[in-house]
Length: 509
Image 1 (tube, helix red, strand yellow):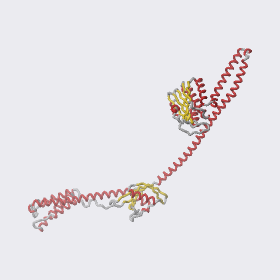
Image 2 (cartoon, rainbow, N blue to C red):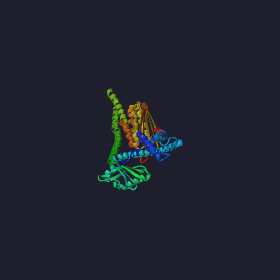
Image 3 (cartoon, one colour):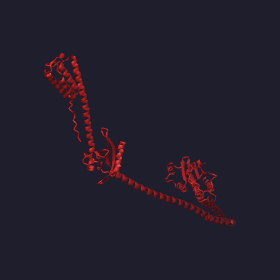
Image 4 (spheres, rainbow, N blue to C red):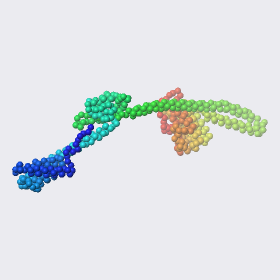
């Protein structure tokens, strides 16, 4: 809608205003001369005041002051043919009175002119704002409309008229002509905005011939210029594609999460199966070691014992054989004794009988003594007096751990000493093996306590401890390596609540 607002309301600017003022003032002076015979001894100033008033109202402050100056000169001094001279125009009081009234007319005219200019500027700004508003709203892709509290449309942009088939709002069309899937919810949103009198955003839906549409709707209060009624402004963007894409993304995420959970469950099950298999393999290996130790002791050991007795019988008749045969018999007897010792050592290393008969403490003491004699490594073994017999699987795991640690110390660390400490704190059985060697290489340390590809021995120790519900920690530096293991000290036939393991055997002591 265009507003027909004049640009100047008859106001004159620039040089034209001064020229027009001069012409009108001269004309007013000569008209006064012409009407002088009709007034006798006193000629009033209405014509001159008219010129001054016109200059003040239509031409501005400068032209109106010019008119006053020309009027004073024309009445009192210059122009011939005037009915009276300076003295006849009431003298100085008349001049002062004329100037005062003329200035009063100029001030009133200037004030009125300023008011007209301000109103003119305000109306031009209003017209500019309305033109920009119409250009913006009519070309906006968003649906925009304004309605009153009763739901009657006050304004509707071109997009809304085209989208919903509304041609005009002159008849105060009802906002219900705009389809809404949930009118009650939309009306509730309207009431909230009008009550709170602050902008709000909502997601609303419409049912249209091509299906269900989603709208990002911004609703805001619009107060009329006179401060009266509060209207409701609405601007809505069709976000159906975005909402559908988000819903598809959520559905895809949900499906992916479901697949991940299924895959995770499968991996957990497979991992558990591998752990069960690993535990079974360790159990089978221990049983095989026990069987092999028994076989070596019961079969090969017995055969060597019988062979030794036969050699002993042969040695009784050494005088009947040659010296060479005699020497061979003596050497054979020594070799058989050495073989018997080796078989017994191998049998005990595979599965020490003391572990079954006397328990972990005795088995470790026997093994440490033998290891120190064979390797030359000085081993310090400390066993807490409170440690008694433990479940067989716990004793086997601890013995194998100490055995593996001492083997690694002898083969890799280069340490001449080793310290072994065993203790029991609360419901946990703890063992610590420490050396003073060169430590594990720095590039391999991250693999020790993580899931990296550590050595077979370390993985075997960790798996044994894990199967029994324990924890294994390995710390290494150039000053040496420390292996700490903690296992629940469950008594046979009893169950104990699982507690947190102590930080280390040393701190637990």
